[in-house]
Length: 243
Image (cartoon, rainbow, N blue to C red):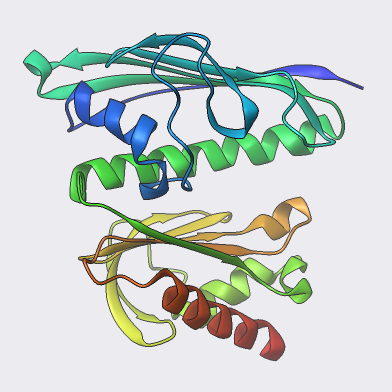
């Protein structure tokens, strides 16, 4: 049965309103995935066939779609309100994701709400540590075996993360090649790693009946999306052929 939903989040970040605006309009690949920027006017086109319904840079952006192309959702709206703090040196952001889920409402809402927290955290990491550096984006998902109930725990173990490795600590990671990183996000559903040049995100989508996923937001000048995808896909396939 169709039912409306609304996910509301507010946060402050050490970035100017103009920097936040640039991120949410033109740098989505730095924290989410690459999307065409919205046309700069009310009534303009935006990503995934949506329409701009509010456009007031750098303070308000709203886009809405009545046909998102998913069988589990119809209407979808994303609203960003941005206000200056500390004389414009920092920004306060109110983010509202709303619309209509048409099936499996509880599972869809739970997944959307938890993903929202992770994506907005990644936005803050980008703004704090990497903006305005350009990004090279890659993403991939695990094989069918990664849908198992214990799949995300197996992934964490393969990375070399222990149960006492909590958010904020530095860790030695066993990825396609060993590297050091800050464990910038960790809960039972997501893992975020921040290196000097990249944000690497791990998604425990097995909790919602899908394979686990990885996205790489690489800010190095010589970043190669294809090489990143190939290396991490081989690693991920290896984790679940052995688990």
